[in-house]
Structure formats: structure tokens, C-alpha cells
Image 1: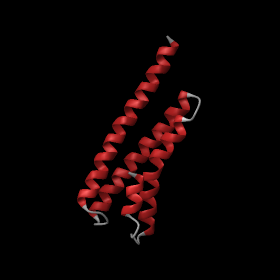
Image 2: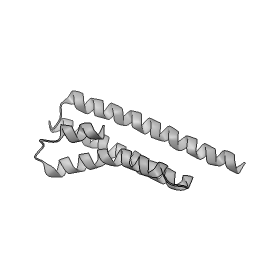
Image 3: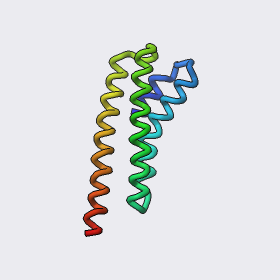
Image 4: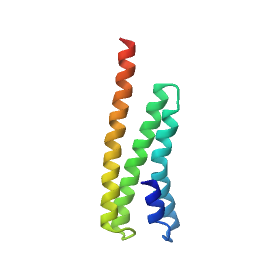
Amino acid sequence: MAANVYKGFSSCEDYGFKDQITRAALSIPSNIAEGMEKESVKEQLRFLDIAKGSTAEFATQAYIAMDIKYIEKSIGKEWIETSNHLLAMLSNLRKNLKNCVNHEKS
């Protein structure tokens, strides 16, 4: 998705908006990758939370981009749907990591 966002905004001249939405999109997989390389589950969970926040931020910006006609509605809806799937997957991953920790403690 991040690559598609970069491509979708390659010709956008609103550099502030372009920078914000592309950084949010790039932050999602970057924080997942960085977090999963951490040793402690507490740190992994923290990075997953950051990725979830970036996902919500990105979806909000996609709605705005559609409203101000920076992207086609079909593209925006696709990105938002992908964001919703990512949020669900991140929530499940977070829950599973917490369950692993709780099982180890018992």
C-alpha cells in the first residue's frame, strides 16, 4: 500500500499533504518490521500500537484526499478498506502476542 500511495501522489504539488500521507503510509510497515525485531513483547506491542496509530492517521488522510479531489474515490475507498484490514490484523497480532505472554506467566 505504501508504494501505491507514493505512486498516487507522485505528481501532487501540495507538498505538505503529500509528505504527511506518504509518511503515514510508510510508517505502517516500517513500525511493524521494527517492532517484530525487538526482543521484548512489551516493545513489540508498543511498535504495533504505533503502526495502528499510523494506519488510522493514513485512513483519515485518505478520506480528506478524496474530499479535496486529490485522489479518485475508488482509490481512496480501496486504501481505506486496506487500512481497515490492516487495523484488524494488527489488533489480532497484538492480542495473540499478549496471550502468549499471559500463557507463559501461568
